[in-house]
Length: 207
Image (cartoon, rainbow, N blue to C red; front, side, top):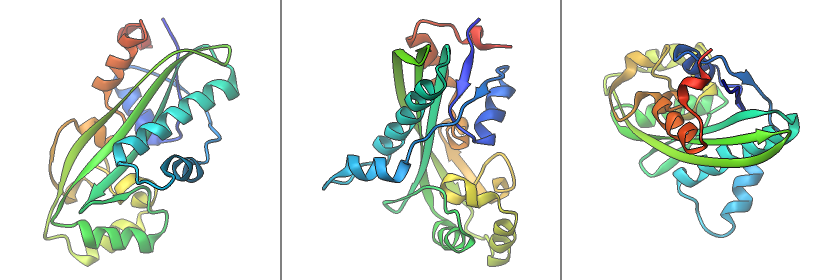
């Protein structure tokens, strides 16, 4: 048996792991996401799949070093792209409302970066990463009253793209094409592949 540590405070990622039989220990990280992305960009734009993978790796490596744990440390990050524009968490009701008015009736792509490190006493022994993507289509008949009511719950302020598929945002999503777990922020299938790549079995993570 090997211990899985989750370098994320995302309730959705934690819930997903628990649903598939894993009880990870959560770790904090000290990654300045905006500064890291700006430094990596330089004078050129970064595609969303590169951004989420960059951040997922930084979170996993930082948590490993900060907490000096022994086991597997998983970092993750998600972003949503619609009409060529990339969105993270809106944080404010105003931004969330603006995004919902733009994305209703449209199809966008949710990118989730996953990075797994084998950590021994705070040192990275081996690591592997992958980015997954899933298309999300929103209903076109969503009213402004529904949008306002959804925003008032506070749920969309803390998630990439200002929506969920596993909670109150689900009724407004018409269809998805791809792995639904990607939209939640953690592809279980992708994680299994990363665990195997590092020389472990996914079933070793079951508690």
